[in-house]
Each structure stands twice: as structure tokens, then as C-alpha cells.
Length: 219
Image (cartoon, rainbow, N blue to C red; front, top):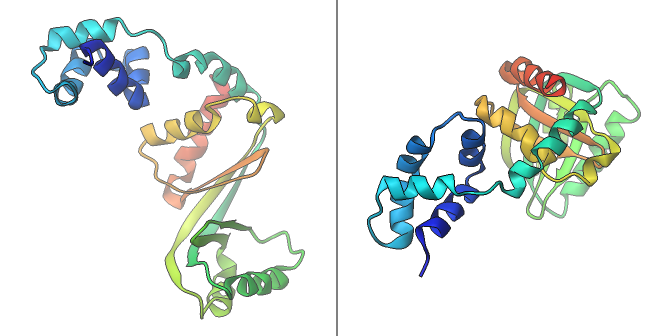
């Protein structure tokens, strides 16, 4: 039979925000106990007093999430330049047999013009395209016969140059996106390569996003 300690540990570990808020003293043990009491009781199938949950929380040992915090902080100091692009559009199309031809046609139109922002992310069922707004008319023309799932404009992107060690450091993406989540910023798309991470947000959020990322490098 599962104990209160095991239940509390499982619930807290599944919700990193709880764990970090507790570690940063943004929430006290009493408040956290009340917040998870219903989940603990449902997990154990019986009533559990807040005091017992508090004792279980106090016994929690640091998890891997908290142990890598120091390494992540060192990592953020070595983040490279931030490149900001505005006036972007986001399109998501259903994968079809003709979609690749439409993409190829668009690539031919762009050629070697580096003034355009253009990325493609192909999933199993759909393909996402983020482009400069001045390509909007051309995209609609070339993809007119494709099945459009989603479209949004008035977007901006921030590209982060990551150090070579990013592939060896766990938690990199989590700690970057966590900062944005805590600030209430809705990330529209994430585009990544081995040493680059591009975050696409609404234009209204780009200044706040940039400020948060800059602040991460200073801490």
C-alpha cells in the first residue's frame, strides 16, 4: 500500500513548478500541503490531514531537477547572441503528397535572399512554416491547394545561440521555457537545431521575452 510520503513525493515531482516554488521559498509548506491535499487523498483513497502532508513535504530530498540547477545557471552565462526578428507569419499545413512541391516552389522563390526569415518543421501529420510577413502573399498563392490547419501573423522570434555543451546538459529547454511560462508568455512555436533555439512569440510579448532572456544571462 502506498504511503503518504510516497504519494506526496510523486505528486510534487510530477509538478516541477511546485518543487521550484518551494525551493525558492515562493510558496510555504503549509500552502503547498493544502494545494495538494485533494490529490493526495484521491491517490490514497482516504482522508489525510494537512499536518501529515506537511511532514512528508519537509522530508523530501532534493531531486535531479534541483541538483542540476547550479549547472544550468553556469550554462546560461555562456549563452551566445540573441537575434530578434519581427513581422513574422506562422502557417501549419496538413502533410499531403503535394506539400513538398509547394515547399520547393517557395524555396525557389526565396533563393539566396537572406533578408527573408524562413523555417520549416515537418511532423508526422502536419508541417509548420514560419516566414517573414512580406512572403505572406506568395505563401498563400503557392499553398492555395494545400490544407491549412492554422495561421497566425504579427509574430516575432528570438534566436538563441547555444554553446556546444548544450547537448550534454539536461534541462536546458525546460529552464528557458519555464521563465517564459512564469511570466505568462505564450510560446507560439519552438524551432531548434543542434546549437540554435528559436522561440516564436506574439509581437506584443517580444520585448518581455527578450528582457527575461537577457536577465537569465546576468544571474
